Image 1 (cartoon, rainbow, N blue to C red):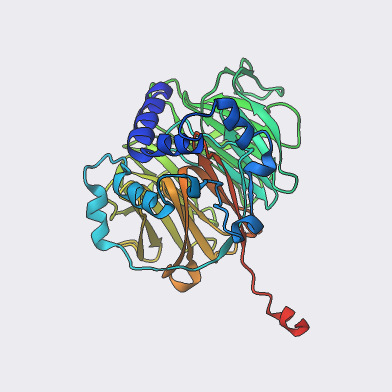
Image 2: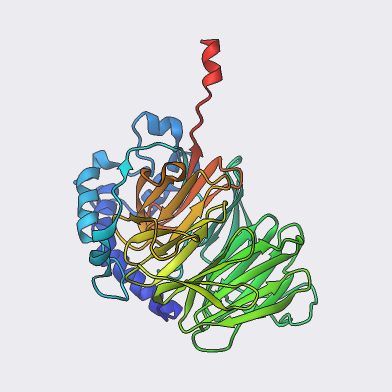
Length: 448
C-alpha cells in the first residue's frame, strides 16, 4: 500500500477526487444553489435540516426521484452526460503504469442488467468517510438492520429500522482500555486515524495509521484491548479479519504495511502468530475451514499460505498491479482477489495455475469484495460510482451493476443475505445506500 500519511492521503484524495473524479461537482453544487446565489444556510436547510427530505425511499425512486437526491432537472448537465464525463475523466490510481489497460484484454464478457438486490433507501443523515484512498473496508453490517461505519473520528452504529445513529467509539480524543489484559497498552491512544475496520457479531476491531489496534465488545462498556502492532514508519493497518477457530475461540488477523500478518487470540487477548512477507500486506482472508490463508499486497502476485506456519503453499499469478482485497466463497473451494488493474480474479484451489474468471470494473481498482453467506452472490466495489453483484451459481456470467456517484467507503452484505449496504463518501451527497434482496414469492400467486 502506498505509504501516505494522513495529510498526504488527504491531499491525494482531494486532488484526485476534485480534479479528476468530481470535476463537475462544483458546477453541480452551483446549480443546486441556484447559480451560487444561495447561502450555505439555504443549502443546509434544504439538504439536512430534515432528514426525511434528504433521504430517498424506494417509493420515491419508483416515482422517478434520483436515488441520491441529485436534482438533475435543475442542473445544466444530464445524468447520462455526467456519467460519460466521469467514465472519461476518472483517474485510476496505479502502482504499475498501464496495468488497467493490460488487464482488459483478458476479462470475461458478462451479461449486465440483472436485478438481484432492489434499492430500498438512501440515508443522507449518516456520513461514511475515508482516510486512506486505497483502503475501503469501513462499512460492516451485523444484521439487516444494524450497520457500523466510520464517520470522521466517530465509529457509528446506524439502525435502518429507525434511521437513528449512535456513537459507539470516539477516537478524536483519548481512547484507553477499561479492562486489564497482558500486552494491552493501558495508556491507550490519542486522535487515532482509523484506516480500516472489522465488525463481526458483537466484536469490533479498528486499525490505525500508526499500527494501532482498538478492540471493543459491543455488548460491554468501554474498550477491551489496545495494542500497537509495530513502531516502524510503515505501520499502517491495512486490513482486519475477525474469525472463529474450530473450537469457537475468537481471533482476528491484522495485515500491515510493515510486511507483517499478525494473529490475535481474543479469548486470552494475546498475539499468537506473526508472519513476515517480502512486501507490504494489504489484505488477508482465511478459508472457511481455517486451513488456508490468502494474502495479497504490494506485489502483482498473491500467496496461499499455511495459517499455522506461515509457509507459502501456492503463488497466484495473473494480476498486473497491487491487490487490496480478497474473499473466500463459503464453499471453501473458490476465492477472489481485487486489484488496481481494475479486475477481480476468481480462483479455484484445485487448480491455481490460472484464474477461472476475470471480472472487470468500469472506473478503477477493485477495492472491496464480499460474498453472501449462502454463496449465491458476490459483490465487488470499485473506488467510486460502481458496485457489481454477480450470480455465482451461474459462473459469474450475469451481473447487476449498481450505478451512483461518489467514493465508496465500503460494502457489506447482512449475515442473512437480505440486505446490501454501500457507504458513499462525497462532500454533498455522502450517504449510506441500502438494497434489499429480491425474492420471488411465487406461492403468493395463488391468492391472485
